[in-house]
Amino acid sequence: MPVQASHAVKRQDTDAAERMVEELKGAARTLGFEVREEELLREVGYRARSGVCRIGEQRVILLDRALSPADRVEVLCAALAGHDLESVFLSPALRARLNRRREVTKPAD
Image 1: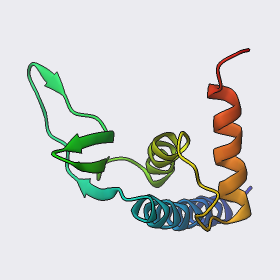
Image 2: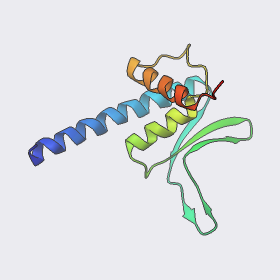
Image 3: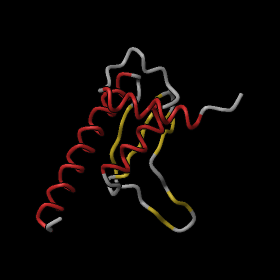
Image 4: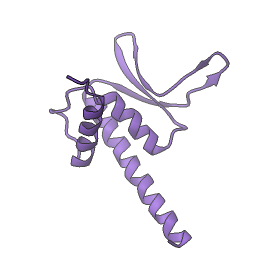
């Protein structure tokens, strides 16, 4: 594949991941989460990571701005996979992705 074509494919993948991030953020907000994209600082003694937390009564999903769009999709999918998403509109591709994640993380009977 020529270099120029390779860059075009990577750009398309990034654009698709960014669209998924926006869709997942909307779904999270519909479920009552606050979604924050912040620069998570790393200092000696602790390592902040993206994920779900609670601040007072508010459920918050923190996304590290330094993460790639694909990694932000993974964080959001992990945060939402355990929630009832039947009443939330999701594209078929994202719904399938979340269902696959649920199957992998479902406890064995």
